[in-house]
Length: 436
View 1 (cartoon, rainbow, N blue to C red):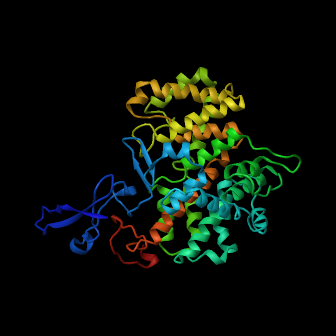
View 2: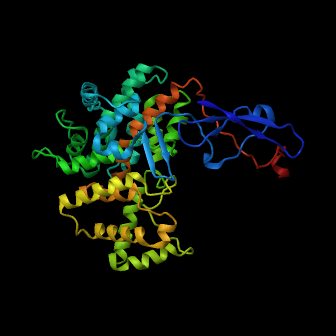
View 3: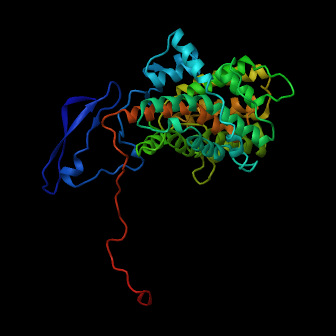
């Protein structure tokens, strides 16, 4: 962090002494006011629900400019990475800080590929779940359960352990997600195949059966790889902050990532693409494209409880750069599968058109976001809606690991301990029960 020559002065109207607060400058983005000594010198905390104005860490991994609609991984624009790199190159970049050269990519790909199988006993663990269990319930259990199977990589303070755990998690997540899916549909598990790409392997484990040879469709594999890249990291969001907070206690990497999976499950976070598809299905039940005007009227009505899902973003106040890329992929996939006439997809495209042209949405910057398009793409591929968030977790795993590793190696890191503004009862005395 670079200290600024400018300082912030905090003064009080009650005559308490004022205090100078240092200001630090990032390489890009807003400056931050250092309040670490605030409590010690004034006996006061700051109040910031949701930490919307608080930098909880310093980081070199991901930068977002919501007003410009910019997303950078280690300085590289997401638009360039999604077109010029594959997911494992992006993983290498997030973990190590630079894009790999040819030999580094080869070595890293081989390493991840050699760790795609999971301990056979995990199948028995999986079979303990009901067949209709939500895949995210299963994933929370399986990822946390990995610490029971891989004891040689559970010391979060050992850099070598963290590196082994990172490769294991990246390699095994597609296998675990595919196992959760196969279990839910009553099909046999498909083992990984080492001569396929990362995304191709995942598609095969998802959709192959022992009855016949499965040949991955290149357009779909490329689309899945792009979904992985676009979701690989997104700065200090709720699940990433959860992983950092969980890891700050010194828990093992698998437990910290499982905490991230659990947080991602929420409909306001990773479940947003599932919620967007559910919304489209509800409109379809109302009467589809013909009833879209009625639906939009309900969205605009402040007194109705109807919400527009898959539009707008908490951070981006401009078109989400990931959504532009996902939109291209969406149309490629629909054309390749000949699904342009699917009623839900026609409805989605009609809704997209309205959102990009209607003054109500444009003025509020409610552009279609990445969740809107990725949900449509995954549905077209034949992936059930309940699995969308698990695929998001698979993609985000590398971001969580990179952020966790960065935190642990930061000399300034401490166990997370948010403060509170207490407004409950002050100290009081317990009276005997017959006097209450």
